[in-house]
Length: 319
Image 1 (tube, rainbow, N blue to C red):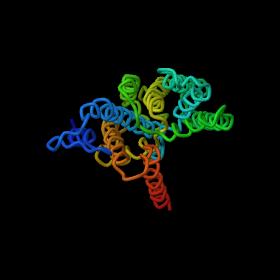
Image 2 (spheres, helix red, strand yellow):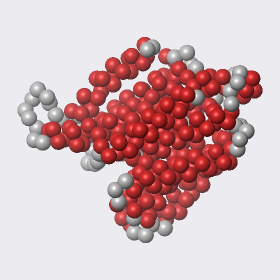
Image 3 (cartoon, rainbow, N blue to C red):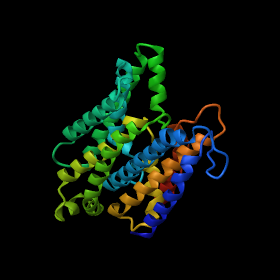
């Protein structure tokens, strides 16, 4: 293993126990016994920490792979339209009232992600063109966003509208082991697909024509990207709502510590994404606010200035 990977693993080994102890009620393992401490740890904080690790890893890996595929350091997994598709599915579960049923919300979200993946592959066609693929993803994202706005405006009850808006903000609050069991296998499978695409992504950095001459199948690579990004992003949206900017920030932070090849960036980005989401969730829990800050909002408050800095750097480099 490379040095950055070892450092990230060590940081996670330190952060995970801390995340179990941190919260509105701090648990001191050497101090007085907190009432129901074991229940708090095992039923509330442990699944929340596990979910942060799983979703952060998926978003980080998806961001690294997508930036390599599009050869654009400003790319984000949300551009593929899969996250909005999953969110649309979840919104429909609230709109129809099925969200109250067990597993209905993640099932609707996964169906929405699957529909977006299928539509993306259908529109992009068999040629494997990166440009057409990107434009198709942007169209799907715009369509899903418009349909979500329509669903919100036509909400049957004020309660449904409130639930939809709150869920779309993204959070790990009140999540259980059930959510972990839903998202973990899908996310791991998605990361596996992205790692299979690693060598093809390396070849793609030389250009589409050069990649074809090296034996890269554009259609196979496109399929791996749809599956990988679809599973990682779709699984995250299915259980936690929309959490943005992780896939944008993490690859940028890790790229200087690698050889800058997409294949060597996927694993460090997955570990860094897990660490970022875990730490961000801990901070959301301990901030002295009237109610807990939503994780999606917190990351957007950090990610938007980060994105602005990247844009300013890009403008200076092109000047």
